[in-house]
Image (cartoon, rainbow, N blue to C red; front, top):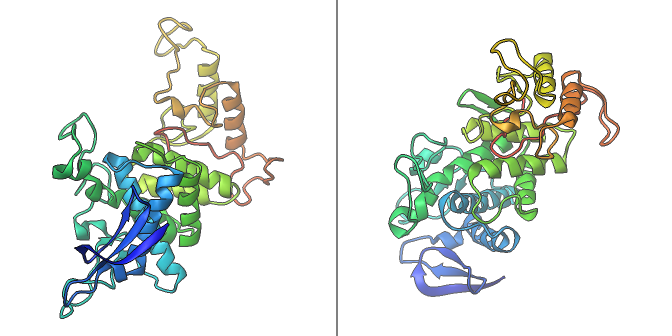
Length: 336
């Protein structure tokens, strides 16, 4: 990408133009430090160029919020790599030189700039076509269905994954900003995040990226916990009987489901009227990532429950984590 410095069509900002692939650094008003002078803002705009060619995330609804959030993640990560360790965007720019430095967004506390940090709560606005207070027509009057408000949710997730923290009764152990950024970059590069994706599928994509980057670490589990903390994820693959945990009883339940066994209570005979051992949503029984529930998932769950060793990829029992951690699918992105 090329850059144009001192552009006069607008002031106090930096902008990535999707049509020309140019980054414009706009002039500053008198007495103002332009956002174009902030390293994280510049990196934010360059990240939009990366997104365009790697995942082409749309600019509306949750995909638009994810697009903006990825740029914030990238901006913060670039500053950290250059010795400025903070969790806000544009802290070195402000509107009046007589006032203390300000910032545009906070990944640590998004509500400080009227952005959501929990799905469905607080500053969150419904970006979807249906449901209460839905947004059927994305346009400038609603910020393309609340992109700026809702980008705070993946921002908060990223902060928790990188730094760690306790939020919404979920404890996340931080894996470091470099590792967290590697996961998000791979999710974008591999197109696990693309087009008009929503947050739930983005969560699944980033957990998948964490698996691929470092299977035998805590990265997948902490990525899942970070998305769970902001309430994007709420279902646990492997919890076949819906008890809230994973145990031998789930193995028994899944065997009964796969082989469609009869059931005494409630009374049910095989496939009449349907499986006697329902799994809803489906991902509670889908563990190995092949998008179907079958005997292979039973084997996977047995290996997980009894924490078996594994030859490929090499893993010895619980060193450092369970070798058969369930692979989340679709909206089922909470790992045990």
